[in-house]
Amino acid sequence: MASIEINPLPSAPFGVLVSGWEPAEPLARESKQKITEALHQHRLLVFRGQPQPTDEDLVRFVESFGDPIKGSEWFRNAGALPEILPVTNIRGKNGQRLGVEGATDLEWHADYSYAATPGKTSFLNAVELPPEPPRTYFTDMYEAYATLDPKLQSRLTNLRATHSIADYMAEPDKDFAAKVERDEAAGIDRPDIPEAEHPVVVHHPDTGDAILYVSRGITRRIVGMERDESSALLKELHLHATRPERVYGHDWQVGDLVMFDTLGTMHRRDAWDPSKRRLMRQLSTACII
Ligand SMILES: [Fe+2]
Image 1 (cartoon, rainbow, N blue to C red):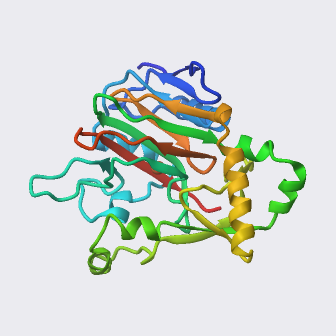
Image 2 (image 1 turned 90 degrees about the vertical axis):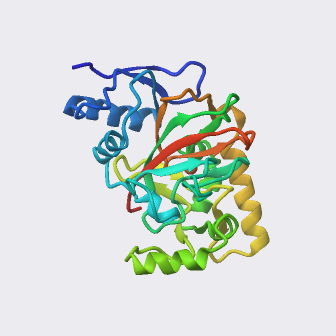
Image 3 (image 1 turned 120 degrees about the vertical axis):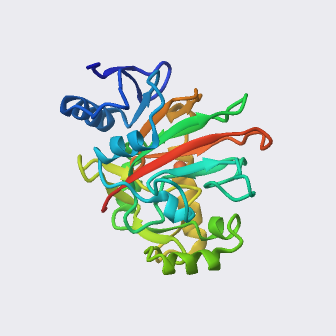
């Protein structure tokens, strides 16, 4: 049995490169431990060079690290395995959506921060890429918190913020009401307008480490604060968190699996030529914060 090997990720402010993963084999206890420790320490793992996992392999791997969110049910009502959310601009034979669409750039966010039980760890796998694949950028929100001025850190204590994708959902999914109806009929439990309130500083459930938990794409407002003051504070935090020296830009290769601490990082994606096909598989585990 091959063993997992962990090496530095060249010229990245955080993250490591992982080789030796065998997707078709059950994950050995030592490998799981090695991966978990690396994730706690480095926040982001790039698995490269392994055979492409099947859908079942991918779900089994993710299940070793927590309870998968049924992403496919959140955003649509089909899909072979509900844990896998296709992120793609490819359409089905009858023109139907195959998952989350859109080739425009995607703003900084943490997956499922708009859910009451947000994403803990996320997994993104490249299945098909356009000739000039868009980069995905990651920033470390532990580092962002740790490097804030102590006065600002104490100002954030006990603050809460709202996270919402109501605007986002309304735009691409014109028949959102019909979708809600289908979800109800199928017994899928999901808020009509996906939004949630979370502390501005959260602690990772495994390590207790402090995380600055706001993002430009999804955090809407600091609870109980005047709109102008809230916007100014969120802007200041955002600029601090996304300083270029803290950002890792991932250049995708087909087969890459990037596993990342989605509670403790934020990510964004560049736009790409919408006439070119791109297919990613996305999975997340959930947590209580
Ligand atoms: Fe994401």
